[in-house]
Amino acid sequence: MLDQWLDRVGGVGDPIGHRSATEHDCLGGIAMTGQYVLDLQDIEETQVAVVGGKGAHLGGLSRIDGIAVPDGFCVTTDAFRRIMAQVPSIDELLEELSRVNPDDREAIRTLSAQIRRAVEGTAIPGDLATAVTRALSRLGEQAAYAVRSSATAEDLPTASFAGQQDTYLNVVGPAAILQHLSRCWASLFTERAVTYRRRNGIDHRTVHMAVVVQRMVFPHASGILFTADPVTGNRKVATVDAGFGLGEALVSGLVNPDVFKVRNGEVEARTIAAKQRAVEALPAGGTQEVAIGSERQEQPALTDAQAVRLVELGRRIEAHFGSPQDIEWCLADDGFRIVQSRPITTLFPVPVPETGDEENHVYVSVGHQQMMTDAMRPLGTPCGSGRPWWRCTRPAGGSSSTSPGAWPRPRAAPLCWTSWGKAIRWSGTRWRPSSTATASSRRSRTRLPALRRPAVGPPRSRPIRPSSPS
Image 1 (cartoon, rainbow, N blue to C red):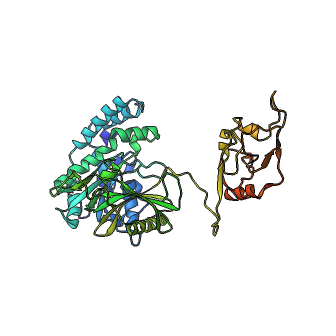
Image 2: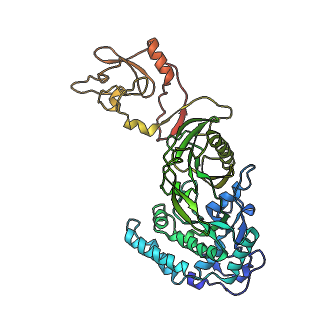
Image 3: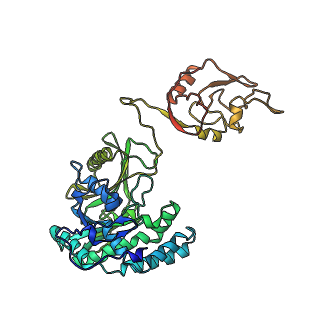
């Protein structure tokens, strides 16, 4: 039980924030090694259990040639586990939380708030505080920092947890950073995070919190880069969302961003929004919301050249991680700083093409055929028969108005293609297979290649090469 796994708090750690394993008990069967602080440059991408999803991705980003990541360090999950071992009655609270219905918002709100208060009220041991302040002294004690949560179930390929835990910007001074460190630990139990874990079947006890501390960037502009279009799923089109000031204004929905669509090194579309508000840093710490002058509101946050340059960096990051990425960026002094990258979790999976295959392909989800209710014209629009799809694929039987083997009578289009590309022609009384097609229909067929009839089997997506008219 957690209340039985109390560490010995006394003593000061060695110069790099370690304590030997023999100085600790075990928490949940995991040895507490006491490695409390790691520089970002020393973090491996595989160390999610130690530094969380955000910390692991930042460690990977710092190793990519040409990618600038703000300096910083990570307070590891060892520190979190040590704090949790000292939280009163945490076992009972977590057990009660695990039994709550995820739809019972009032119970989740009450319990999660109780846990957060208990975590924030737990004093940070002296040796842990010393390890953090020593890391700050290497970067500058009175510099401004971003204090960012990094949970072990965060930024995963199947569950991003984006926005579920807290981040604090422009925190100045060791005392303030230690205070916000406790707040980040407590944010593992926000109502949003608890509900998200319950709905995704993740046990609260298996998730731990690391905290990333990075030098603040005071940007002219900031935003999000998607290396694949998040709306269409097109992997060849990158989308850049951009606004003035800190990115908090954009991610919180305070402003509508400028949107740039970039393909093959060129901006193919742009939408410039009226950006009336921005979030900026205060000199003494913290942030404030400010109004943007009317003469600047409709100016683009980025030039086309900057958007293209940012996408080039994004493609480099995408190649490193091996999948389309959702990237947080800042622009300061005409240089881009990358402050986060995570997999895009909402894209429809596309099979990996064969090496050297640059051809266009049509993909069909076999399970969708049951929803197709009409024969299809060459450009994909239905004939308007109003009949079920199976009547458009030569049914075995008929009805009082449709003889066996008949096809629904169309309102238009004497020549159509079935869903798998079979040509059929209206003869005046019934649909008949067509062995020839007019020149105009062949041109239409070229624009939208027909699909071979899918093999019978469970619903799946697979590439179908265009076939010639039959």
